[in-house]
Length: 179
Image (cartoon, rainbow, N blue to C red; front, top):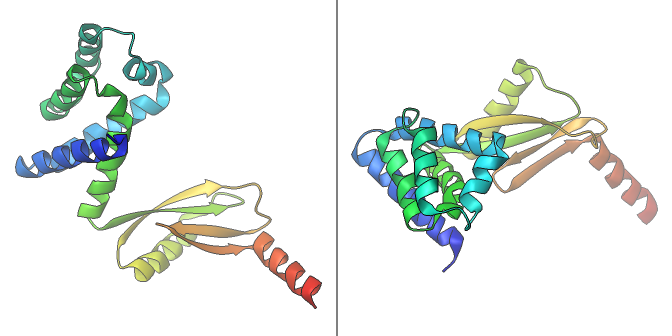
């Protein structure tokens, strides 16, 4: 079985359950907490990827870490995954849940790459442009890319708008070589 399909099924189940119980925003916060913990702690990530650690140890650690920090439904999913030996899917389930959550709320995560951190006014203008382009609410992440000479690259979903000086120079070079 394909792990991405399994991850998607678990994420859909978590989304459906949270919608039915009217706790979607609470579960979203739980997913962010767990994702942050996985990103910040390599040991936690490795704990769930390791087939050597016994299930009962994983369950105890999971409950100790998350018991008072996340909703019981989210904790039940984590425990269920550990019991079914599917805990290696937790990170991909969290990613899939975020994708489904964004789709449910008509949100598109976008990334802008520039040579330096952009000020909020510029980000707001670019965000408004992207929202008009996609008819979705945009969450814009500002990333720094040292390879750009100037300008920016905007990635919205699977589309890229290249407004970088380096791409303009490459295009100019191609035109000069052809002529």
